[in-house]
Amino acid sequence: MDYYATLIHKVKKLIAQLNIYLRKFPSYERHALCQQIRESAYRVFTLIVEGDKRFKKKTTLTNLNIEHEKLRMLLYVAFEEGYFSWESKKHGQRAKPAQSEVDRRYTTVSTMVDEIGRMIGGWIGYEAKNA
Image: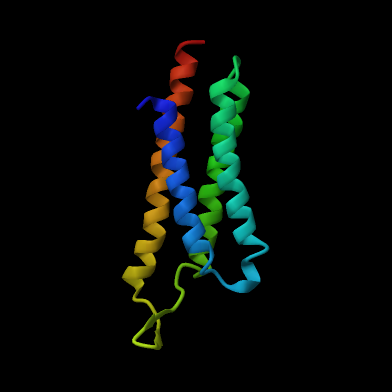
């Protein structure tokens, strides 16, 4: 699998995971923060495609890097606001998740975002060398 395909695959996995988690966020955030996170993730996806197809990549890769950082910060805001701590149902009763479960949820997407960021950084470095 080439670099581009690997990056696309990782972003698609991130979007799938985000869609699971965003459905659990409070209803009052579904049309605000959730929507911004979704749009940012999709924008990262489209900028990767755009960056692969453009002859001059510098501006597109800069925009990709900025959008990636926006996504990282939006997820951090969601974590700080406690939106990764939704209740789960166990045996018909609602149970507050342990802090370790909340941290695991955030760490899951945060790790994916970090890995994508390292790949974007590598791509930018490669293009800078070959320009």
